[in-house]
Length: 431
Length: 34
Image (cartoon, rainbow over all chains, first blue to last red; front, top):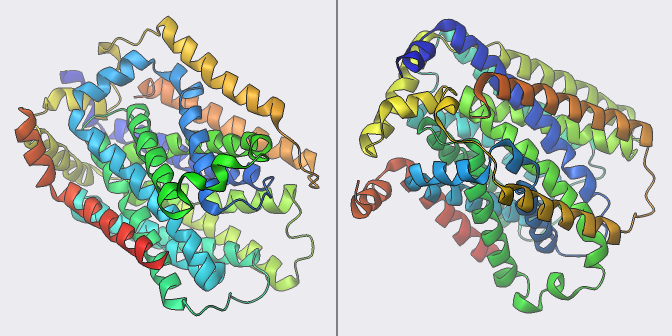
């Protein structure tokens, strides 16, 4: 116990966990950006609600494949039982994601991507605000660190907007519902920025990201299912009756699998960096989404000089923003604010401070039962069987792809996941 | 901590109230524009 207290108060510990968090934030960007790629293979005429439901079903299934092996279900359910009050927050976060994602559909419909995209990309700024107000992030930070985080986040927002514009051809959609569209985009930004409050709260209270994701995906799937029933035709919705869906599901599930891995890294970034630094870093996913679109699917093959300039400028701004945030290592004074937030949680919910501190610092793994049961392997086998079944029935669409770039980008994904996974295991045993 | 005390602590926690209110606003907006 005393070791944990000593560990969290050492500057060496701060530094190493900061860089682990930075690695997780950047890996989240790589994987979340790649999650869009499989959905590009789906050109079915299905509604966005239906696409969203299928992808989230994939996220839910994928959570029970590879991530189950990291920590067995026994550990996860014991963790959930120890932090019962946080289940509400995890489900709430899943619901916030689902509603925000649906709002973006309406924003694009009413004002077009040109206007909607910059608006909802400000979610990282909303996250910084909540981080400062509710968790004391950046409180006591040096002026240079505050400047690095704020300017870095602004640079990443600006870069995301530039990269978004580089893929847009033609003007914004004309609509008689422009105000509705703007409200929907602002709403999505607010919801996605607010979604990180539960993330941070859970980790300050010592919950494991894998446990959080378990409840999160339940909230996400339930909400998307409810939205399909309420807004997409109820039980008569095409997603429940379409004959062609069987051939498309694999690609959407694959997108869900990639997304859940990216989200796990994002969760660890929120844990070890805080949301003020973690969200902007994972928002670099825009760069990787563009890389897949441009290099694999040739989306910029006919781009003019202005669009290419946006790509170069946006990429440079995003890299500089990420570098600025990465170099803003929190000082001991800032960590004192984090400890105050942690003590607030312990006092409010009668939690054991030493246990929470151990879990927060990633050193509680030695005290918990982590052996996998036979059922864990059965669950993983069942999850994998779903993917195999869908893969056998999948149809590869006639879409031109550069397979060399597929291999190169997939290699980047494997390397980042391997490096960060190894770091998480070595330094915190995925805690 | 008893379940009722925990429920009270949750619903009076500003870190719950803010996301919950934002979710309600988001749902209301969704219903209004759909």
